Image (cartoon, rainbow, N blue to C red; front, side, top):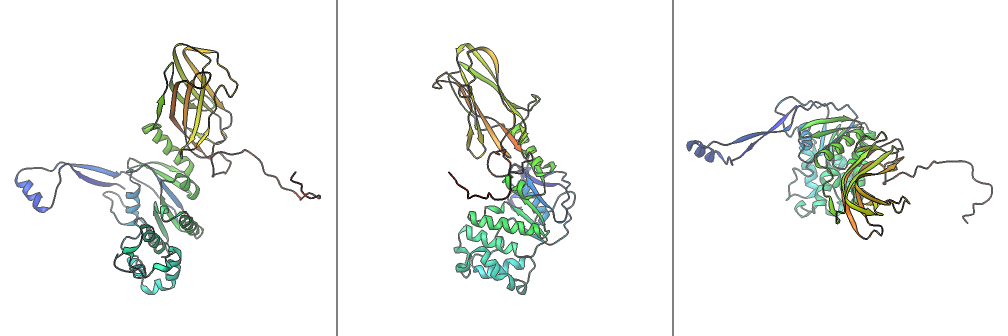
Length: 397
């Protein structure tokens, strides 16, 4: 299946403008933009599929085609089941009508009669948390109230297939948790769910399979952790670790930084528990006494996780001159799934004079490595135990 849009380099205008331009011999320059190209994909009954990719990659277009809002230019989409779309929440609401009237109106757009809505009405209002405001015109609703009502109507229509496009940002944190619980309820009932989200942790945690849309094409399909890893890999190849900041007097220059696997092969994708090495290639135009090399690890959220250096790790370097290589090896990577950034540096002995400090110079991705842990930044690597309670009272001291 493919979907194409036409871009005009000169504004086409209305029919009158087109006729005038044609009479004047002015041609409209046009260009075909393929939002999706040769997408072949099957979603099984009861499956939860996550769709990931960068902005403008075609994810939302794909969801709109599945929903029947758009039609493909080539190929076809076959949907077996009643669809509820959480795409444009509140689409079809009339601002002059009350929340009560809009529930019936919105449900009718999904093919439900008033009689079908009546037994669901109280549950919809309660889910949206709008009991006090349900008879108020929705033009007076805040954007959060508006979206909550749209979400509540959509999830109470007894769907068989649920399409979700970044609908988890509705309301506050408590309401978002409620939305996720409702989606989990759908999963337990065996509904088919297709989710588009930039929240990669949510995709990995909630979906049974994932696909990556990159540049309008299907770049990867498979286990969520593997697809997310491929996404990070492509992002690193095309954008690197954007946002690097660098300072120092350049008496020592760190020319290249890379992460390597246990065999010394460069890679930017690891699994929790695997070995990882960091290599820093440097050059010094003159002899520099007792330098200190260090690195910092940052989570993509901006949290600084650790910052070892050769001084604190009791690895003194007498002097450097010319070119050389500094390595740091982690025998068992404790980081949990996510994207991380490395900063590297070379300072003088007292850590007061920076020779070369490079913030966020490279990124790397960590995938699930068998621990089963999903929350936080690192694993403790501990082990659980259980047994009978001790005979004597437990004394905390």
